Image (tube, rainbow, N blue to C red; front, side, top):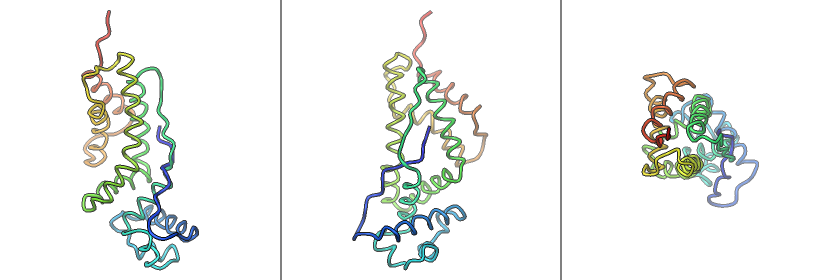
Length: 202
């Protein structure tokens, strides 16, 4: 289950005014709730936050990084890893929770970050480090438990297993060609485990 929280953003440049920073991050979140990342401008953020555009550029090189800090601060930090005693059940539960999250307004904002990062390598790198890596690391705990308990064939790389389970969700979110709900989460994990599960001795 994904709970709001991400490590506090790294400070850049000179010391920030706490009040101005809070206003900028709050304004950015509110704008992202109404517009796409591409349509939000630094001018929009400055106007809504009641600061100058120069204030924003003192602390952030561009508005994409403002957005990343805003959403990262809101998302927070605690990554709850389910432990039902079954790797397949844990992955199924986590996939269900992740589908619900990505279909929420906050999740849709994060999908925009992936698209926005295609033309901004620094932004995409920070997104991977701050958001994707800690979540993938938490999911590798489920994979390792499954290997240690003899549920998953150890010859499969854990990173590949995560892509096999969560990749279809990302593809369906982006392409919209098929349903994405709890029933599909069960079907996806069932299909993947047909290939990675160790056979149960009779």
